[in-house]
Length: 237
Length: 202
Image 1 (cartoon, each protein chain N blue to C red):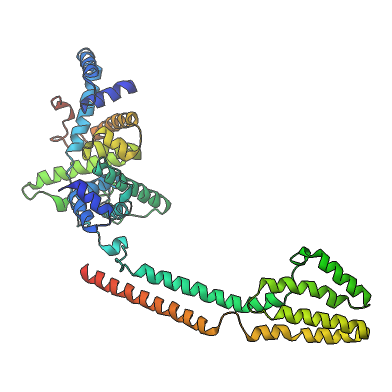
Image 2: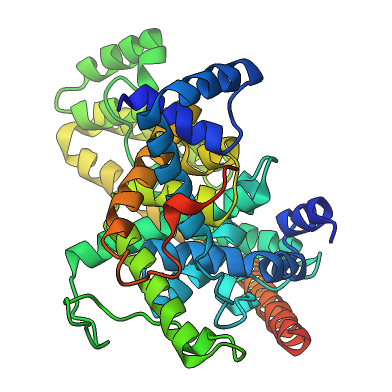
């Protein structure tokens, strides 16, 4: 038996052949006993299969919300509190970062090629001044470096540039008069600057407390809303 | 039952609507699992899993025959179960028949109007058919269960099994022929029912 004939017979049995194909097959069935026999076999198998009893489902397969882990519907205001909590927490971390890194950035000399490279003339002029005083390399190279740092953090160290330039001028003058000994004094005068920045953090702790309060309060309201929604949902189901 | 409306509601998350659909189709889905797996308890578990899976993925239903879509879900669940069994084979607790086959007699389903002889005959017929189904390759068994037991037409079976229509025709024809050969072995056992050749033409 050819596979093609087998498929034709099976489809014929299910009424899936076109009328032209059915007519052709019926003509063959009249003349080919082998084909008729296979058709009978297929029909018999199908008939027996259809005698299989349709079993009734042994239990009810209805789904419960727990089965599909469906979340309870949350109030419309819930996303607003979620946003508030996230925002307040992020801002809180940002203020901590700002208070910690702000003073450091203000006092730290910039990396080579950053900031100071924009003023070659000033640098050259100052270098020329320094060359007049032997052993005054340190303050001279520090002076241009201070300016970009101040520019990076203008608010907290607003008074620093004025003081710095005054000090630099003072140091430079003093250095010309007293040579290397006074350099130490000039450097010592520069030391208190980071300390003054630490005493006045960029963001007041009051704001940090407010942000922490907002974050905690929003989180508490969220938890409360969720719990109430779950309780309501359980009662309903 | 407005099936389309229920499907739409279920797609919007309405579990009650989906449960109405379950009540309508649970017998078909369970019987498909039962005939593919040949185990009553396993079929019940797989049916439950299939409905859970169907609810979770109901948004992937894009129209057509919902029954075929459900049967595809349960068939996939059966495949998963059979793969799992292959990885971790277990020993059945049910008593075996004389020829070593697992007994799966539907005594609880027996029609109370049947005589004991008729019941025994029906049980044996069902056992014989299930035995022959179990011996079919999985892809043949799925097609024959859907077409001959569940009454899906060829195109619905093609959608459910995700193979071309021509493949369905071929698999169904070969599955029927193999079943016929297998059932012939039970001709003497079931003389009053097994009269395959005497049926009138369809």
